[in-house]
Image (cartoon, rainbow, N blue to C red; front, side, top):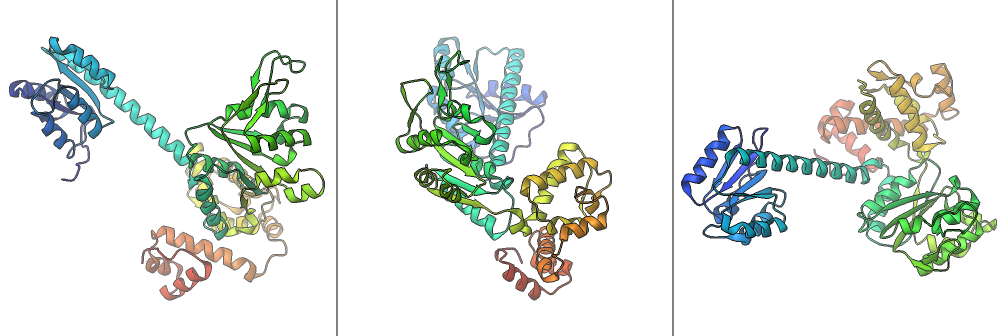
Length: 467
């Protein structure tokens, strides 16, 4: 039988398991009158069967009945409904069994004969614990979604390749090197790798090398012993120890000086290190993900980066293309960021004008996704109407809208250079509005179904959308 969705009142759904008919009926009637949804079972076997048909928040069960009994019943209930709070009813002589059941994870126990006022108090406390647990589970799910691929936006071929690479490398413990210009989302990719790996329950520790003075970088990475240098009044653990059983993301790894490069190479080879000023060798189980906005091979040629360290880091490389090389992703990113900041700022903004989207797609975005995000956040804050216009997006180019567009497009005014981006944007919008129905999307676009299929094939869109 299919499991029925819970339709309980706000108070909650209770299952009563009691083999004495008059007591079972009495408890059921009492709780029903007080607004609870109540499901009754005469024995443990029927209760297990009933749990396949209904969803409950709390189980109130006798400790000793025919069929499944004692702790076997508790075990069976927990296996069938692990998220349900269980309260056992017990006679004085079986209190020890109730205590043993609490060690197995039940919420609490009540002694017979029942005090009905006390029963209500226990039920409310158990329901409150269930509600808190649900909130915690929701927050955990949101945390997972925040670090999943969902926040790495893009339908372009280059981004699809990134998604595939994340899935492949996440399943391993190998070192990863992420390359790309500033603002392309390297830390977001590193986070996605960690939270989709077997280390997801371990720490994700970040280190941005350019933000730390060269003289302090070694002590920041490896930690230091008390007295190692002036001001070292206590022992401090470094990033590697903090990331034990997890992942260390080293951003802008090209900024590490020669001495620290040697120590980092040793860790990658031997998985151990010493704190600054210390002699004790420390081991740490850490996956290293490094990132650089510089061409490390060019840095090797200049003598700024060790070649052997480069090869140790470059086991599994991932390249993030700049935004100017994947302009078909700009409308998707823009709308995603718009929704984010509309919610944060409690604004009522429907979207961008077509002119605004054209402007976003024509600009080269030297600051990449980070620059796009900053501009959209500012536009959301400053916009009072329902639509964001092009003049509100790139004021740093010009105060005049027409001049801003001219600067944004520059010499790139050829239709054959810009039309594809606009056409892709309109096709994506039409498919989104029709939930992937190509026939309806073609009608919205004012073209034939056959023409739309041709364009989808030409631009490499997925072929599994609904007809």
